[in-house]
Image 1: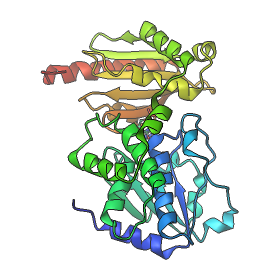
Image 2: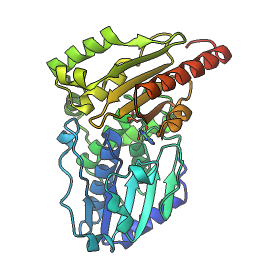
Image 3: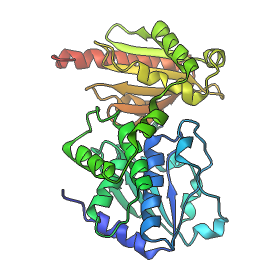
Image 4: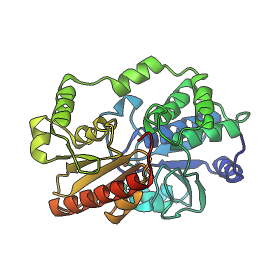
Length: 327
Ligand code: AMP
């Protein structure tokens, strides 16, 4: 495996600083939590005297099994710290905006780069997860890092959640080799999979609702609008409601699927997913971005929702005219 020279700089910076603060994106997911906790654990195991913290002000029920984050510190203490932002394409999406107080900042990310922020950047858009990059970072300095089953478990968590258990396009031989390296450290996959994939009885009722109510445009865009009434009816958090996107991912003929989730402030979160056809350009037109086949956006009302839907349908029609075969 070949590693980019920036890894030497990042490792050097980690050596240099006594305090290191790790940051992630808003609406935390398995990858940004796994990457921050995994890197923290690697640094702590290797350099026990360093003060390494993840200071976040969000909470996720789904990921709470990975354990809490750290206590906050006074603002002055940020000034002596190295900040490392993981899995976050643009700086407005960093969940703890105090990252600006850090002395120096490193960006490690696998999203399509729209905004190059930070003093040092390691961005690989083709990596299936940011955790894969942390695993690669571990592999590059294997003789020096001290890893533990906990670190490997955090990293493996992001690798499986962001790649849909190794099924999405970004998965390569390198992904599986690095995942293998993590498994060798003693990841308890049965326990991990139980935490990630067992469903509550009620959430399966919601899944049945999604299958009953989902719609399809003429050219094969599956979609569903989950307004606050539905969220209340099923007792869903926004995070629960957002899971609807994954239920629509295997419909023959539908290359694109969208979940619209009404937020508390009346705006509508859009989750966009696709097979083969990229859809990030549509997300970018509606205050969003992300990856070619997995993006997020926000629309302000139902009218905008309809126009996004229309654009997605038109794009899929065009795409299908120019691509035929298995899809
Ligand atoms: P989501 O549907 O929210 O899980 O988002 C899918 C992917 O797009 C994730 O990698 C997000 O980090 C990214 N993403 C979501 N919303 C935005 C946004 N507004 N701007 C840039 N990237 C986003």
